[in-house]
Length: 316
Image (cartoon, rainbow, N blue to C red):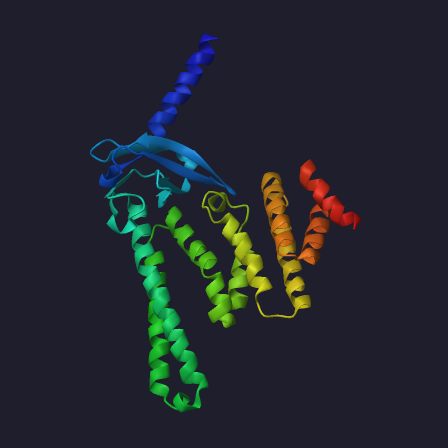
């Protein structure tokens, strides 16, 4: 019994020593409770909780198993996203909801994340504007004879894209934020691509198909739900005939099941979510194909509740 107690104490001490700190001063939140939340697949969980003192100071902690994205959230339910990469983080500002007031005093990956979050929307906005003008100059005969503006627009679009690439490449190759930012951009631009840049749909769809759904970094990123929804929404809204839409969905389902063929928990969780998603969008042909595909695989055991739903489609 004593040995068991000593072992528990040793584990507790090791966890405390390995924990990283998130601290700082949020002057508009004095007296409030602040929480650090993390992501695990489709769910969130509380990592640590702190009371903000009367001067606005707070202290939170996280461990190695929390590596990924997280967010600070207070009683006003307005989150401030942070990179939980194993570094100590220090922030100053007014509150989690007033992101313009936040200054990342300490934490390299979080500083780079904040910089990208500030700069990239400006690049995206300008790229959309240039794309709109580019289409006008190329398609309207009133402008199409003027090649100089067309060349200048192409050069500026190239410069903006290269500027983003240079920023990402200067980040450490093993840093979480270097992996996260391109994935977040891919997922967040799906609707823009479908509506305004349809020529980019094939490349975006292939990138979504190649996204490793079993990657632990994805499951700790908060992007898993958006990645799945964006993937199949893009196919549904690709402008193709319905039979081509379902053909593309079958290709994606084949790749998804193959990716997860040795990851039992991930296969069950993702299949369950995707099955529900396809049903909500009345994509019953794709739901049927997913059910048959998952039931035919023999590498993983399917949870009983999920198996019953899939068997219903196989019986039909």
